[in-house]
Length: 533
Image (cartoon, rainbow, N blue to C red):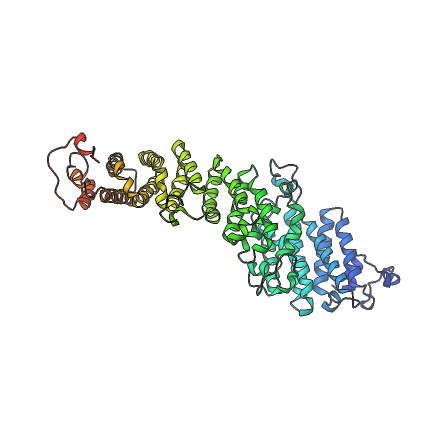
């Protein structure tokens, strides 16, 4: 299709060529309207389209325009001071194109829209992505066009991220089109990958500086998202939270810190939402911020304390996934707020109770009362990390830890026995860290560990690998406890014979006592388990 015919089909005219455009004949190329005027008219037509079919036709014509028009006409300003006008015209046209594939707004924050509400979105999104990919193909990577590329790149990136994810408003074809648009954007701008697209290379820009010097578009994307990321509006835009989270998770230090004031509030809004999926997304964003922001910046303006209070209250959540993400984030945030108790000098004045103690105490309290296996696995998996962080300061919580250990070792957790294995790891860690305080607890713990060995050896539902791992970790706990008692457990372990347990258990106990011989006479439970400490 010739350009003049295309313009004639679009019924476009200009003040400079009104006499020619009024006729029914195709517009000859010498009478091409100024590009800025043409872009403005296209924008008006896209905004005023009355149906999806009319919109699709217009988008197709725009794509053809970008493919067949002379680049020198498309990207050349008419005057010396017309470059800003050209950039604004392209920015407005791109915004109008993207608006054709915009998502309908949610009525409230209680529920998402049904899939039927997005029925027309995938086809329009695919057409828009195709047209914008054609624009990038014509734009190229010319030095004089870099400014124009940086103007439209944030809009294109937001569109691509919105539609390349597997969501109710996307289809396989629209996702493919969005990915092609993202690849074309990276290729045209010479960016290596998405993080490079957002952060650029070389020296990092600060908030308020011109980001074009660094060729990163993070600030431009935040400018686009900011009006929608407010307390009253963000939940009505179904895609804005996903685009924001994707953008944030691509940015690492040191590029994240200069934009912290714009990245932290939306993350807190997500975290504070009642829907678990939004809360988890918010906690994930906060965790990324904690990991990629210098501690001094987080402590500034009391930000770290605010994060701690927000996350701590979520430990009372009834959603297992929320608790899991919060426990992981808190572990890294606590290092920002205070030194780990295990790293402090052995002085009672410097080992005062701190936030680590508050978190561990609450976790142990919840563990004692928890009966759901899924939640028990989450707590049991997080506990060893907190015990490691506490070090010898765990002595303040030994009574609670002992009750948790005894309770969790009694309950099976098929098929992988995750809870039991993690609790055995906890027992090993506290035995090493607080060994002078463990001797008085050996009697109760020894009885529990021997019962566990016998129960596991006779459990036919466990796989061989899980059984061997459980028995091996239990044996290691017995060995560590024997060391705490200076070998006092070995005489008691030698009294166990084949009438009390299987040969497999005897084999494990033999490795602890250094002998393979057992007493042939049966020893009563009263003689086996009670210990003098």
